[in-house]
Image (cartoon, rainbow, N blue to C red; front, side, top):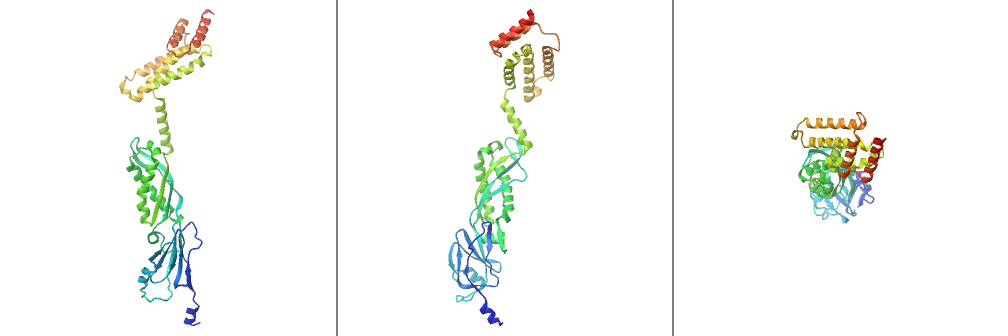
Length: 352
């Protein structure tokens, strides 16, 4: 077949469109093969789409949603690249790329490794965080030149890793410049999300993307540090160790009174508890505030008293037991009915 016959048989493209876009595709090249675009052809761009004409790898004209008739007037940049004159009437070849500009929602981000930052309460601390973000293609020409390039299709999954790494990189900056201690971050996640959006928006724009939203759902510590924090919170909840020991003793007295001879040893046990609580409180404030030997000596004396009350030595004098019971009653550590019951047991042992 002659060259003229091949030219006559060559098909021309009259309609260019992306009728059924894949929602996971960010960019799709219209299949051209050896066909040429007819002068005056119709370009149909649907909502949430954009079209870009590319000539020999160079981006030219961009079209938004609508129905466009392709002429030298509607393709000024492409006309300039091809050096067409105003009387251009012949078909032409050019690559046409469609872009999905709808919002890409529900994208996950998170720290694969803890991020070490300086904290106002704990000093240096390692934090983990995760959340969600959404974006869209806002500048098709920049997205083509910076990200997708001359390829047949570009999927959103292809750049998820890059966007997540970009988010984590800015996370350390947000933690460091936010000035919010870790213990207050749970109540300030909205402010942290806004800070992250401000930091990430320019980086997304450099890729031709618009960051629509960025949310921080959780900020946590690694397991080892979380356990230490819970221990510290437990100590804060206990508060005054002396008062906590008095409370535990008062709660245990009714139970001890149900056993024969159980209340008689409470006095010594209470004294030992007071000494131990004092020792723990003193060690938390600083051992230098009291002589080093005071706590061991007192603890040893209490241990001897406890052993004697438990039956390791000679039984205590009944009169002394009654005096201890009366002292506990006067201090309000036992109820009157518990006192009467325990006194009856001591008198029963005394009388026989």
